[in-house]
Length: 322
Image (cartoon, rainbow, N blue to C red; front, side):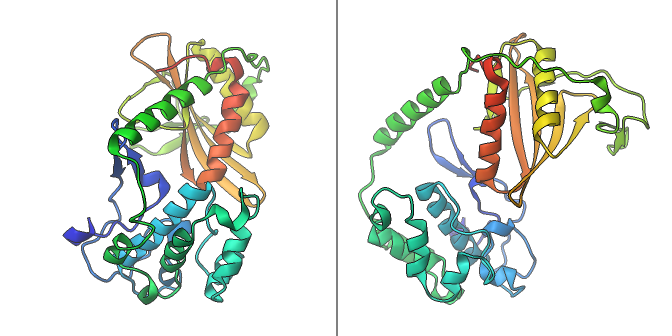
């Protein structure tokens, strides 16, 4: 991508995909640029480099590599390195103050072996990629020449075998067939002021402004598999009932689609705001459904926690594989 003069400008975990053969694919080039220097504010705030937050002109390639450092850190630790790369951030300010030792000390808490959880070469690489001044960050060629990058790696066949096993384990652990089925019910009044449908011009109208449409399940598209989805052979209306009760009881805001089995949710906890859409989709095999959650905004890890909470709430409805 960079070798062809293109910078992505929205590198993040959500835009890193795996093919069926477990090859990495980069998605969503909507903010990409072929300019060597950019000045427009593009990307996702928590992945933006310091110079973008400061409103300066920036190299899209350097910004991509800064975001790649965040992705690498998150994959290793299962937590983001900081909220955003500004001097007021409680973690990134340590890097601003040239105290990367404190940064790593904080991130070694609750890690097996403490600071030894991280190899010295990994600490060196990521610390350089997080530098405040883009001039001090390594280029792609320098990253490729780094000790950590050239460390031992499994073969492609070993990767396929390991990831196939992980996928199989995840599918099996995703089932909750023996769990109880939620029995709570909702009052029809929950839809008053909390439903929308699409007008002919594509704009949303609330349920009091237009003709109420009969809900129909949208079709599931297998090309867009997500981590945040599960399958069920339960009755469609029972699945929707559970989704409605979950929305009313455990989220801060909710708005149901009037024509599909779908809801937009807002969840606020500990100053973290997550916006997501949950859809119930029908597979071609009648009698089987997919419940998918799509993050619209907010922290990826907080979203994952919310999805797992929702899946657990559905209990025995999580009873099938694709």
